[in-house]
Image (tube, rainbow over all chains, first blue to last red):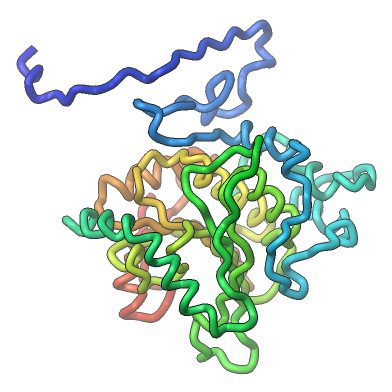
Length: 122
Length: 221
């Protein structure tokens, strides 16, 4: 190979993760994901802390992610310490949800985010 | 363009910048800057700490300085801290008027003139009404999760609620075209943009000259 000397020495991606699919329904619904997450879950050398969208969404349901923030600025109408007071209708409106979901406390926080990516018409 | 290297140097001074921010804000009684808490046990740390800011154009006078309208909301260092904050602020699509959220790396003020920003620029995507919350969420998740793979380049993201349409911006440190095109491609992917979506890039030096955020941009398809 003529270009051997020029090519920089790379490092291996530290871990190879194999994901076995048992059913076609386990395939991600969009091209931006690979089964089990996005293409890179770790960078060479492990120098970056990387999370794909589904991992972040999953962590949202952790009990650690549910406490009201302690040191947040109070801005009337913007930072809302009483999230349940916001009408769920208002929160779901923009996502075009056809029906009002259960008025559970979680509704505003978790409800509509679990819908798959949609095609946008911009 | 070698701006990149200069910009990278300024990355290393981010602690000093944080200190400077604290010092600057200490006389502002309203919302002093507070550094992110250390991630607690069991929390998932992020590659960078971030701060979220809010701004609303003042109704009385449009000439009030931009940074006077800028309000610091909170900063965070872990995925869990992010969700805690995010769940307790109004979603951008539910706001009205001339308002913005700015989510920037801690130590970078959401201003053109900041050392981290001044050699860079931003990608701009105009959104029809109704898409702001979803697109904003996807953008910031990609940013927090380090999906852009451009090293230290990303500075922050902004969602701007306006009367006609809403505008998503992603700011980066340099105007190096290799980097900006990589950012553009990742934006298309993470936002799931239709293939012919128009994207615009504007360098902050241009914004400083014409004093507008979203006019006189370079169009790219």
